[in-house]
Length: 324
Image 1 (tube, helix red, strand yellow):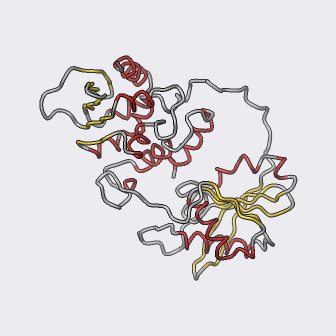
Image 2 (cartoon, helix red, strand yellow):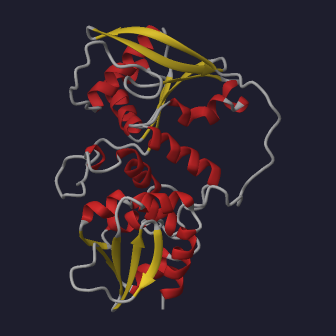
Image 3 (tube, one colour):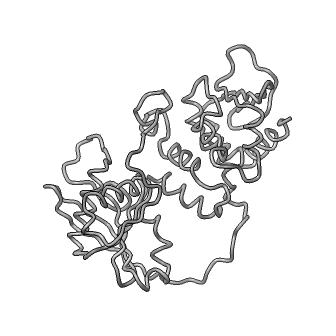
């Protein structure tokens, strides 16, 4: 029933250099359980093909879901939880077994293959490029003394009026807010300020780094925000954050509510479960020496992005995480 859908995925993969070169490191065979049916997808040196039933022990990874779930996955505009393979794994409808590490190592290639990420050259929503211009965004560095450490913090700002301090997500940087920085409807009323956390974007390490484990905790995020508010002498700013920045916003409101005019949380939560990695333990899968953490990070983010988001914006967002 779904063989034509998998055949289209194979044909797509073989047309995409970015998928083919990611398959060069090792050969593998994926077994797809589609209800009671089974299909096999083989990668041989970056060439992909559907194949017959392999010999015992030859299957590398098994992905199994019911017919109804695969139907939802292949819909033109899938519902949340069905927009990528990993999203289906996350909600528990796609059962993953075998060499799970291989699935994560090739996750970005698989998401590209199955079309839930638009091809970069698809031109689906391409628009004529705007004329050459200089944006009204100013970037500077601050040497911040914080908790006995000296940090070189990069920040950008645009506009005038009420201070609007924007907090980026973990593993990314202030580029996520370039839209606000260039939106005159916002900057006519707000002084938009975006800074890169230490060890993110253009902000530097603190002197004395010696290979310690970096932990971006809620407390650390809250503390650095308050240090920036003080250093920039912001009076009653609005604070807005996304993901861990959204979690920080909630805690900023709880702990320092009187010092802010308003708090805007995007994907806010008081608590976020770090989840399990590809080995089933609590250590993060993006820090394994046998996996490309940047590509895994991008593939994981793809699982929480809207499938109808503009292609250019989705790829720009994924690129932030691939760089991070």
